[in-house]
Length: 325
Image (cartoon, rainbow, N blue to C red; front, side, top):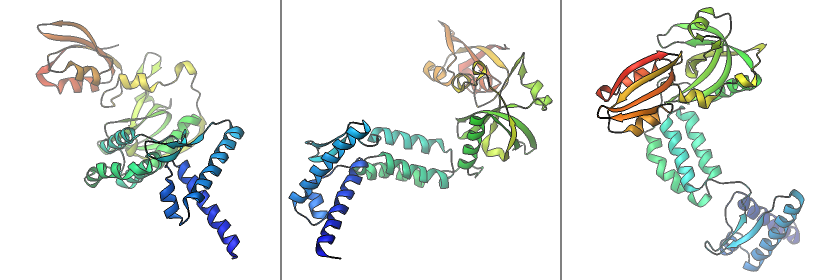
């Protein structure tokens, strides 16, 4: 390669490298660039000027206004606003801690997600700090007993939900028995370690249909996704009118331990030290009155999960009414 061509190649490579780091949200420091590419500060400044002009032209072409600016605090050049939004240190730390605490996935699926999250969403200079903070928790990460890889299954089910396609599933109950069902998938929810498929059962499943039917409204049934061993798309689609759409937020307020069933109205006394804990755990709970006996509350919830949880509170809770609506 001729010397002149080699110089052009090196200059282009330097320019592309600098631009790539700016797009990743990393700052440029003139002195470091000069050392890295074994060139003069004047050459680096010329590259920065070229990049600034290029970014300005791109803004005119795309309508997305960006500038290459000098940040006096860090004494370096940054692309503002960033080409991609990065998480702050606080945001990234909160997200990875939530993921680790959930224990929702096996290590083989969880750890790559954590690594990509930190690598792609955290500024380069802070990545090591975040990784150091979670290193011990990753080392002691306890996998769930089912040992199932779930990401592909979750995605397949999400596609069926989006396309309103009925699924034929083979499901293993907690007691080990196996059932085959044709279901209309409505949503995927997560609660306390596990992912759940929320679905209506096809009309042919008359036994469970009767069990979970209230008036004219069919109450969704919950299936733990790690217990779904076979999941096949059918060629049958179902229609969901907008007014009858499944609303995850409203359902979640009224379900405890992901137990489905009829809608119950529960009235109870609470005498524990933290009313806040009750109101956080049962979002539908409302305080009716305060007295020397404690707080009288009323709440709505599907199934028997709410009574199970209230009874687990021992003498702090006294249930006085539990009526199916």
